[in-house]
Figure 1: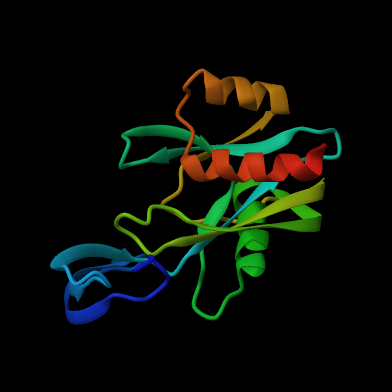
Figure 2: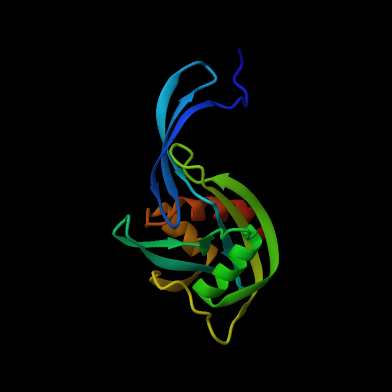
Length: 182
């Protein structure tokens, strides 16, 4: 029998943690091939991110402290979807708060799973162009430690290939955006 998109059969769901950003469950499921087992899953509302580029051709990134890595990671602006909020609204707000820029031209780059081995989080990616620097950067989240970094495309690619700490969603979205950047 060929593999298709048939769903697994949920036999039992046990909530282990309910947090402000995600929930953690252990689900007993029966796979389409008949195998029964327990799978841990982080349930996340999803996120939106953008590859912002200035009229001068500079990428706008943030260097952000991430407690899970115990260090700063270079990444494009991103944020968690709020209840009832579209991905476009989320990333418009996040770019302004994290970088102090506003985009007037948007290109949808698609969506992808962040880590499907243990999470249902989907990232909605955009290319943000025709950026203007805001006179005043809106207040962001209190728990963020962010530095804005401008880089050329060649500098960013060199950082990727040098193995600098860059999150995977930023690398993926950048290469999706290259189709539109020429």
